[in-house]
Length: 231
Image (cartoon, rainbow, N blue to C red; front, side, top):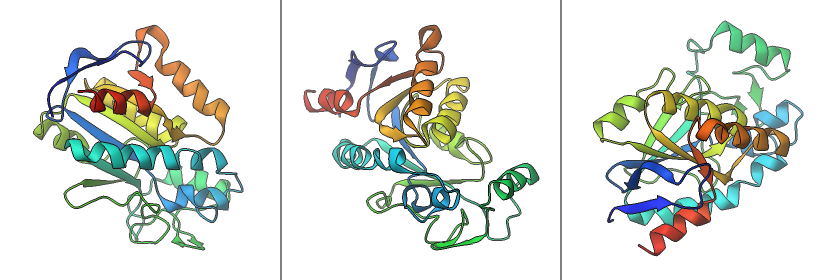
C-alpha cells in the first residue's frame, strides 16, 4: 500500500493533518461491536432501551472492514468486558449498572452481562477478528484505560487512527478523546458508528468538528474506501 493523500471529504479538516497516511502508520480500531450491545436480548435490551440506531451501523461497518482488510492496516478490536470475578469492576460503575437494572455480571439470555468468555460479551456476527488481528479487552469506556493499547500503537509506529463502532457518545468518543490527548490523529467514520439515538450521535459529531477539529475529524466510510480504490 503506497502513501495516500489527505481525505478531502472529512471535516473540519482534510485528514490526516500530516498530509498523508499509509498502512505503516495507520490503524483501524473497531470499538465494542459485541452481542451485548447489538443483539436485542443483550445489555441494551436489559436496560429496556431500543438498539435500532446502534444496529444501523452494523452493515456499513461490516462492509468497511471487509473492504479495508486487504490493504494491510493494523486491525484492532475492543470489547468492553470484565473478569469473571469482577475484580476490575469499579464500585462506581457497579452502582450505576445496578441503578439502571442491569448489573454487570448478572445473568442474561446470552450469559453474564459484559463478562469475558460469555456469549453476549463476544463479538457480534460478522465482527469476529481474523487471525493476526488484535483484541483489546477493556474494563472502562476508553480503549486506552487499563489496557496496553497505547503500547501496541507506539510499538508499531502508528500515528493515525480510523475509529468506528458503538456507542458514538460513550466508548467511541472516550477513545477518540484519549487518543487525541496522546497525539494520534483520529478520523471517526460517522456511518459506521451508532448511539442510543440520532441526537446523541449528531451531538458527538458536532463536538468533534468544533475549534478546528478539537478531537480529530469525521467523515463517511465511502470517502476513505474511495481513496484506497483510486490509489
